[in-house]
Length: 101
Image (cartoon, rainbow, N blue to C red; front, side):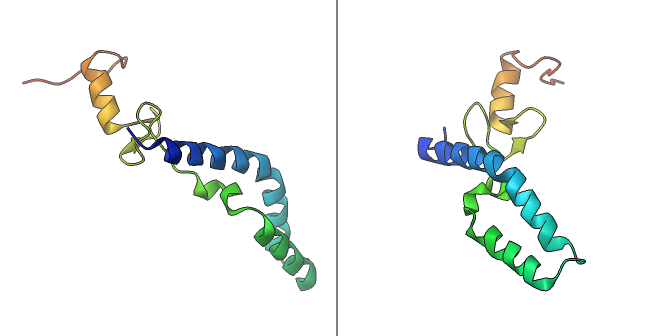
């Protein structure tokens, strides 16, 4: 099980990212628009730098919803390989059969 603080930090980042997504996208569009004057683009860059870092989508870490483990994460199932194996052995994952030969 992952540390509670790490899981909570990630959840805070997720909330911040969704809250700031529209404003961040607007500013990034201004920065990347080559037709605008350089001063306006620079001001947008400064405003973007003032925004909280944890508001960026890239800062969110994919974590297992069962254990909170940050590595070996299956996006489609939203869980780690270890949790998937344990739940698969218990028959909790539909369509997953433990192979034996």
